[in-house]
Amino acid sequence: MAAGSTYTPLATTTLGSAQSSVSFSSFGGYTDLILVANFATNFNLTYGTYIQINGDSGSNYSVTTLKGNGSSATSTRQSSTEGIRFMLPSSTSSSFSNMAIVNFMNYTNSTIFKTVLARNNNANAVTEASVGLWRNTNAITSFVYGGDGGQNFATGSTFTLYGISAA
Image (cartoon, rainbow, N blue to C red; front, side, top):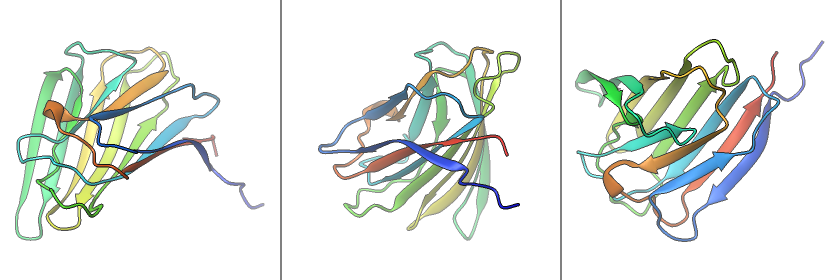
């Protein structure tokens, strides 16, 4: 028997002007969430993007990232941060060369810390894979995806949140 559609679009935001973050809330009835972001930025090498969950700005997050550019690879680890930070490379182009796919797994389970997997890439520079942890057992009811260090997403950037039902 063929399975039905598993990705249900819940919300899409297209920026009418540059802004530093987008917020999502009012989602439920799914086992997992996926955010797909296509954006241009004014990010520099010091800053990337971040996720804060349920308004928690405490030092309750950690992330491990693997990054490669075709000629070298690196890994980084951050602990006790105020959000899950993803380090994208510099991209000041007006074309939308940055893409992120962020998976929030088992986001309503009230007995586990929440895991976030992310794949980020910039067609001109690097690909990275990250695993983040929010050290809290509360269900995820909202999150902010933003430019770290006050960096902005460009006008026309799109962000779509999907719900995934149990298979």
